[in-house]
Amino acid sequence: MVKKTETSPDPSWGYFDWLRVAEEGLRPLAKLMKPGKADLPILGKPSSHSPQADRLESFSRPCLWAAHWLQATPTTFPAAAPESLSRKTIADWVRQALLLGTNPSSPEYWGPTQDHHQHTVEMAALVLALEIAREFLWDPLSQKEKEQVARWFASVRGTKLHPNNHLFFGVLTLSFLDKEGFGQKTDSPQINQWFDTLETMAIGKGWFRDGSNQTVDYYNAYAFHYYGLWWGRLFGQNDSTRTKRWQNFTREFLPDYAHFFATSGENVPFGRSLTYRFNAVAPFALAEMCGASSVPPGLARRISSKNLHFFWSQPIFQSQGLLSLGWIDEFLPLTERYSCGGSPYWAAKGLAPLLLPPSSPFWQDSEQPLPSENSDFSHPIPTAELVVRSIEGEIELLNAGTAISTSNTVFGPYKWGKLFYRTGVGFDVQLPEGLYPIDSSLTAQMEDGSLHGRQQTRSLAVEKDHLACSYHLGDSVEIETHLWWNGPWQFHLHLYQCKKSSRLLLGGQSLASKKSSDLKESSSFPTISWKNATHHAVLRSINGFENANSRHVTAPKQPRTQIYGPNSLTPYLQTKLNTGNGCLVALHAVAPITSPLDSWELSESKAGHWTLKNKSSQTWTLRHHSLPKV
Image (cartoon, rainbow, N blue to C red; front, side):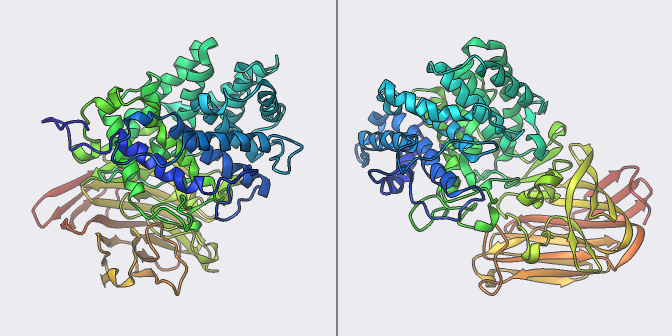
């Protein structure tokens, strides 16, 4: 264990701890490894793909987890807690399952991949597993067995892939075939074409939009940068220019990305595929291994270890002892239709620190504090149209532009469409009857009861103390939103034009709890305050709202909608039904229950110049041409 220095924080988990977690995660999987089978009977909902795809996923992703453990350094494991699994037994089963699954004559055969097929995704997972634990999984195969596996991989040739991060799956699979002597002349041009398309998704400073999804989220970390680095390390020897380019993408990305982690270790929940959990830290150790890191090893280790510790300390396991579908616990409504029982094992990417030997500076250097441990900050990322803030060690993400494409709203546009997201409190998913969730958002309710939230957004400003964007709510409400902040407080200005009669709702932060009695609310319009066992919040109308209300979910009477717990409370301000133009102004704050919220009062409002004061006689001045006189 690294000794604490005067400048380093208390050490977090070290190599032994990571190895222990890898084995703890593998142990319940090993119990499901039956002779003659090429899949694992993992409980969970089926995906929207096919039973065959789910079978393959139940093998490939746990295989990637096993590969990290297989190649780890066993001699460093403390004698007081010896390993209880046999590397030979695990490796033997994986190889036999691989041969059964790729044998067309076997009843365990997975079948070939096809256009836009999930099998291509899982092929790439197996390529990485075979490379990571090559001496256990690939090298022991006979030439005939390797040819069989290669023929199955080769079904990726000629298939169409989704024009997003999925292009990497074809890149990795064809690159592996070429490296192992199973390539064709047409493979190299195809790899280059896919790579060229991927690079058109770069938007600057190491950030990418995920193809047709038009989103910026954690796929940047565990897809674009993860696969780009792996390709360069494994297959990029003959294309040093592209290898260096992807390494430079990562160098640009990591300093921004380090700001997404709270002092608790939690990364701010935002975007799709959150059930992969701690794979969010995948690029930190991999970049260190590839010589492409731009953050100190001690910081990379601390971010990774605190993130793993955060999730591993939560009840994230289902009844078989395996990783569940959810965030801090099992919660199926958070997941997407492409998720199945084996999906959470993409978390295996987060075990990348085990690829580094215990002697690496990643493990040996004194840890450096996270940006959120150093001080409060406001960090704008204009290329990604995001502002990430730290308030008392918690992370708040404000979103000015990233949005789900119209063709992919099935993933849940609210995963990008809320105005802000926070660690420690979570958010609401889709409401019953398919309604857009109201928390942390401005939504429009039409006369027929339909509720419309933000989907497509145009960024207007991404600054250290100001964010602005324009968007539509449904087809009849146009919005221009401006947010300013000061400590835990947000100042909201929403300029609207309603072409049809509608009611606008400004939702506050949803708070959740295990026990309904932990949720309390105090309302006296124009101010609402509410709390749970860990946080309290305030929402106050300044202009344009008619009254306040709140949405309660009480388990088990109502279905759960909050990623943090079965009971939840979401207060909101609302206008009357109206048409035409108007201006909404409000204050909102969230803080740990131990931190007081010193409310602000509007003391002056001139066009372009507003002043607020609090009880401590502090002044908050806002200057912007959008500020009206009210």
